[in-house]
Image (cartoon, rainbow, N blue to C red; front, side, top):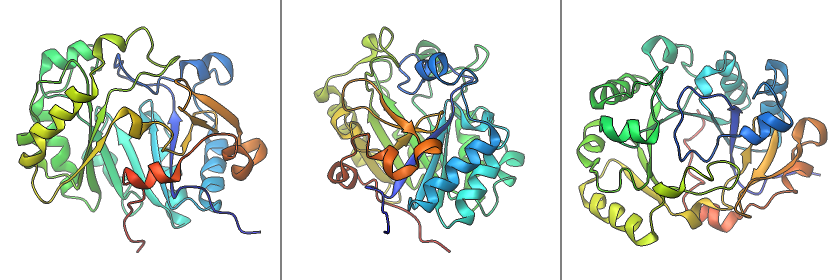
Length: 292
């Protein structure tokens, strides 16, 4: 019998380690590392098997996230595996390891690159912990990274998490300069076991988040799609795989994990978590590029 997953895209958090320490991060997976996966990632062969299982199950777009996925030595092999099976591919990165040489490794295999840009202000980046070795990037560095992507065939998306730290800042001029295909603006999300005890000072109300979006909306160029995700949009609308190869959901205020797809396969594992297709479609999650 043919099987189709409840949504077309899946986010595989392939690498738990990260070289930044953002205080409100809701994908730390310290619980995964301390309980089932001491290394914080699958082996190369296990990860390749997981990707193959995902695309054979019918996922049409695979997003590789972390931690910081570019820390994974075999990430390019995972991306190419997904691409060879006809899926669209995407990597979400903090940008610290990005270079022209690195991007060349992904030629004809990577469709989307998502750059996380919460702020261009050094004090803000220091405050939220978005630094490598105690040093944050600056506006010129982020701009240079976007220009690296611009000269490739990879489509650029920028992700911004709105928190108390950057609530009053303005990214509109930067967004107009780099012209990403999509700019996703997300309300900082509290998740027990991931960022509890750290995220609380950074939470913003729905009204404050809406004011941030309203301030930027008329200033974004027509060439950029502004995607807005409130806390409610972020809950239960994603198919997500943890570093151990388990689906997980965030519908209970914390992460609830399935069995590993390496042990029981995709259909059984995904049936053990909650994913709302209606919310997935409502937030625009079904977009993808035509397969060529």
